[in-house]
Every structure is written in C-alpha cells, then in structure tokens.
Image 1 (cartoon, helix red, strand yellow):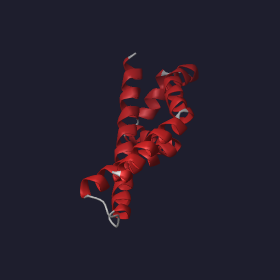
Image 2: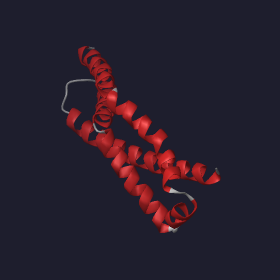
Image 3: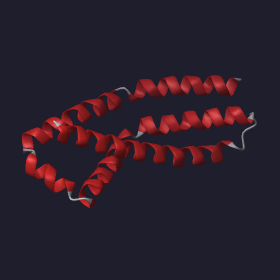
Length: 128
C-alpha cells in the first residue's frame, strides 16, 4: 500500500511540475500577445490568465504526456522503476493507472464545456 501512495505522490508531483511550467510559458506568451489591446492592465492580466486556462483545457494530453515522461525520468534516476517492477505485478500496475486514466478521461470529455465557460467569461471581460 505504501508503494502505491509513493507512486501517486510522484505522479502528482510530476503532473504539478508540468502543469505549472506549461502554464507559465502559455501565460507569458498570451500576455505578450495581449499587451497591444486597448484595455486596462488588470483586464489584460485576467484575459491572459483565461487564455492560459483555455490552452491547458484544449491540450490535456500534452500535459499528461509530459508528466508521464517526467515521472519515468524521476523514477529511473533513483532506480525506483526497478523496485516498482519487482514488487508490483502487471495487474497491480494497471490498477494504479486506472484512477489516473478515469480522471484524465473526464477532463478530455468535458473540455468543450469548460472552453465554452472560459469563452463566455472572456467575452464579458472584452465588453467591459
């Protein structure tokens, strides 16, 4: 049981690193793109943040792929991947990935609804 908690902790850590670093990059480019608008600076900051959220909801598979690559790199650096292979069977590894797959499937299925909410909020900010 402790091994699965450790696996989830490492997975969430890699997911958080990838999400934050991608968000920062997308926010900076969105901010640079919106600085030419005739809006107040706080509106530009809010619109750039919403653009960042919209990009992240459009490409969750990109974040998942990067976080899995980072997870493998983190686990291989300390030879923890060998420990997982040794103590966990294939079935147990599949059961470890099922909650992650369900979570990301839910995000992938509902990304259009999330994007519509973000678009309506952006249009309200542009009108103001």
